Length: 221
Ligand code: DX5
Ligand code: ZN
Image (tube, rainbow, N blue to C red; front, side):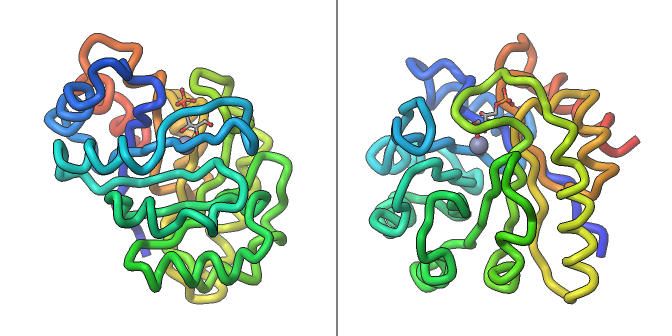
């Protein structure tokens, strides 16, 4: 099945003093989803935002919120994120002791469950839960910061996840996050990714619409 390509700007690289305006700008400029990075200062060495900010932003935008939890023990706060407005909620394999239970709980609470793996985590670690998710997020940088260099060594995992999906008749979106720009998006797309997070590549430019068109063109070429 050929899934439509989706672009999810990451607000991590937006101006946090003007978040609502920044979101409106990418929404108007044609973003498909909004990628919201939640960091707890433990699972990753950085701290961002939580449910209260997501709840406020939810009122300013119609975009699907793709919430990426880079937090330890995500099972403790799933419902808070979903009630705040997460449409898609992704947890890290490395952070959730009872991953199967966590993913089931996300769906039961009304959001699309996603699972993410760090660059050093193999696909085999999530194979037993792939039938439970609507999204697999392959990190192409070590999570924690925007503006890092794309790690091409994760591309075989994207290929593997596309193969497993076809072989098992599963249906998840395949998302890549970290270091995506007009060059690396070509390689990620070729490997089988269909959903692309981009932070600094979009928010560091003057015209978000032009940049997103360039990214889409590069990925579809
Ligand atoms: C990194 C975050 C990413 C980050 C990507 O830990 O998960 O979503 O915003 O930023 P860029 O696109 O600048 O690598
Ligand atoms: Zn992210």
